[in-house]
Length: 247
Image 1 (tube, one colour):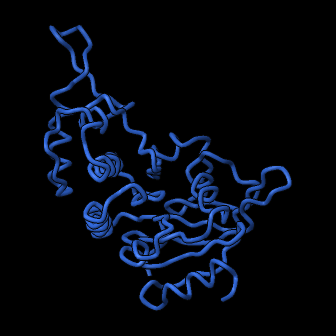
Image 2: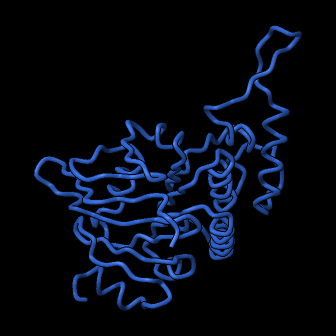
Image 3: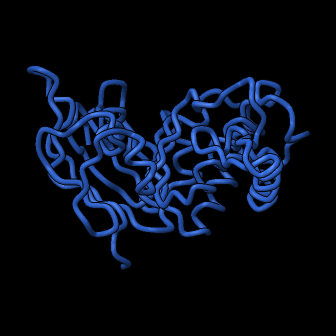
């Protein structure tokens, strides 16, 4: 098997006397989708926030591309190549697709050789190529993203991560606010990310969504790793039993 792009060993996070994570271990490989399953309070959000620099672990090690890492904040994780897409997507509703792709990293150009200005033509051009590459259908790229559907907005957020060459994409409940047709499009997009050798951590309460995209499923219960299964070798019943502690 190929070397893991992301490895977590003994990861522990405490908030006062509460052990939100307790010695969690897992590996993630390029071109793989790892699903995280577990009830509310199982530790899923704490795990991804610790990986992505929101929280600092109390114990354990995170290795990325074979090297130990410690991200001071989410920006450091993004710059290294780990992108987290939360349910709120972190899009600027009043800006168009190109401006959102480059949000916080806008290219500049010079007018008359000395006046600095945003390079809007470049942002629009790069966004158009990105959307075409990911086979995303959008009505127009020059409209504020508030006019897009939930699935289209999700695609823009994923596209931004791909554009900035994220090697690991963490998706937190990406299908929660989507209708069935948009869920299917998102599943197809995740399959295309896998084909492009991206590694994906997929968090969902919906077992049907998990089984539609995951190569492996890791179950958390009360901050601990309750089990890990190959998606094609397990069932929804077994995953539920791991979640509730009856497996």
